[in-house]
Image (cartoon, rainbow, N blue to C red; front, side, top):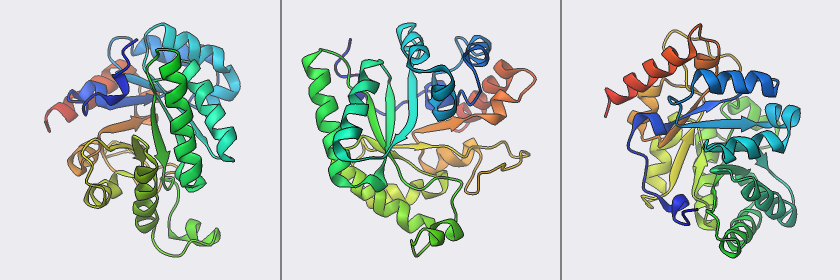
Length: 251
């Protein structure tokens, strides 16, 4: 495997910048979505729902089949536990996984250090490790409930700085905060991965800080994670192709 995979430059094609969220309830449904998007999607996200339902064997099978997988389990625990979970993710062959930046600098730096050592020992590609800042379902009221004073953007920038200092490859944040992250963190290799993407006419569902794909890329997002606008489409392949075309028109 290519040891430099995680150090690749920012993605340039619209296709590889779109990560399709496999937010479904079973392996059967997941494989149906993948079949609909075969050769179109650049990467797929496996989150807590599908991982709990289908387990690590599905992830291992998908990576072995050549699919780029973003394992979205948001690890948040004591440093040793998160580091071991990170190694387990690397063993599955995932392209990217995330941790909660709110877990602190030691937790993040320990995870990236031990995962890097594991991958070097085994001559395998190190996954991209990114930090979750503030969930796109959160707003001022949500943060206030857990004792954080101030708007989400302030917390996002603070946690992004902590993630960068710990050596993470990037962060997950709302597209609305990408510009502020770019202004605060000057490292051009620091990635931003943004969920909360909706079509112009779509509802926000349980998301609060959302934008369109055009706005996300214009704000500087490297990758966008898209679920419902594709999963709920009558023709998933056509829906993804339309999003790719919209993004290509901006490049």
